[in-house]
Amino acid sequence: MTLKKALAELERHGSPKVRALNARNGAPENQFGVRMGDIRNVAKAIKTNHALGQELWQTRNADARLLAILVLRPRDLSNDELEQMVAEGTCAQLADWLNSYVVKQHPQKETLRQRWMQSDDPWLARAGWSLTAERVEKSPDGLDLEALLERIERDLVRALAPTQWTMNGCLAVIGIGFVALRQRALDIGERLGVYRDYPCSRGCTSPFAPIWIREMVSRQPQA
Image 1 (cartoon, rainbow, N blue to C red):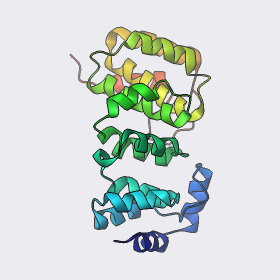
Image 2 (spheres, rainbow, N blue to C red):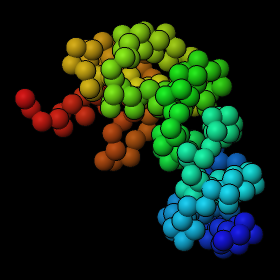
Image 3 (cartoon, helix red, strand yellow):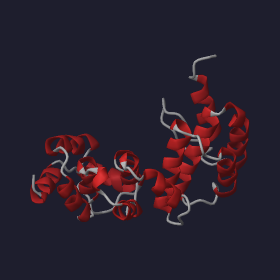
């Protein structure tokens, strides 16, 4: 599929209602307003096409970039190319798809995690904390969890919104997964109060760390 045809297919699925909803959620004006399911269907038709993915990303159109994420080949991106993409995330939906489908599949993600954890860019730091939460959950050996909690306690409240979200997620993952650190994670969450009043749909778990931790722990099999 050519770039022209891919963009035409996205535009065909565009919806004014979806555009308005996306705009309220922080998406850039350059978008067609395509539902996530339709973007996935277009990606299935294309399959993996790294060159087309790069072209789609360069359009700066939000829907085209979401499609690009699904058709790119992560291992074919250099560290610098991926870092530039992450820095251009600009909205949570795009950043989180990029983290899930590209960043976490990249062969150099640990090198990038360490670099981004020191970044002042809020989108790079968001990705760094997302990768750190993944390591805490799946391969914590070598991580200083006490130091992570100290940093979260110091920086969470003043972190910019993109970074704050995944930093808070890391706090929750530590509290859920490590009994010895759970009370400290709960205390940090209660004291800082980040997302305490976050509006939450019925059936969804609050991002307020103490609620999140207790809910996930209650679902764990009893020893």
